[in-house]
Amino acid sequence: MSRKISMNRKNTIAMAVIVVVVFVVFSIFDIISYRDKQKNCTQSVTAEITNITQSRRKKSSSSNRRSKKIIYQPHFSYEVDGVTYEGLTASVSSSTAYKIGERIQIKVDPEKPSKYLVLSDKSPVGKNIFAIIVSLGILAVALIPKKQNNIR
Image 1 (cartoon, rainbow, N blue to C red):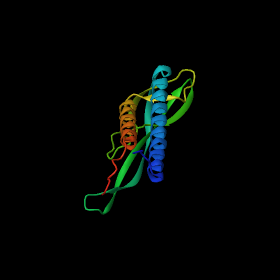
Image 2 (cartoon, rainbow, N blue to C red):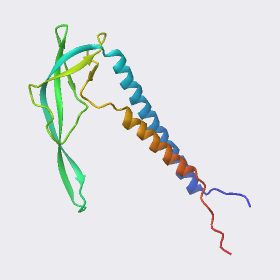
Image 3 (cartoon, rainbow, N blue to C red):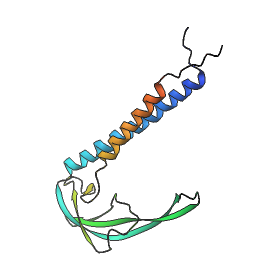
Image 4 (cartoon, rainbow, N blue to C red):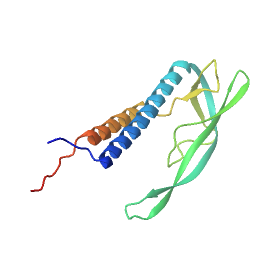
């Protein structure tokens, strides 16, 4: 008895492969980008929180009604060699973790001071490794052959 893979199954496998490749490529790019910032951003600078933007995001609640959650993202400015730069923290939270005027520590690339690393931001490496593992798990499940039910 030969195995035949249906066209629908082939499409599912192809879509799973595409999704996994996209997730893995973006995750690896994010890890490499972060490691590059860690390596090149060596100059310590004090930045000041200049603004905190608020946005509303919809979230699903357990009662299936949509509710809105307020998200805060701090903006900051810093100065290197008399030039002022602006940036955003990667920290987006549902509470105001920072206050306007508060000072934070960042590291900048001495060659490109517009490139910075906020020391209080969480590293994206763990979440990206998790995304890669989950993606590969999805691919493994998609590649497991389906059992065929033979009805006699």
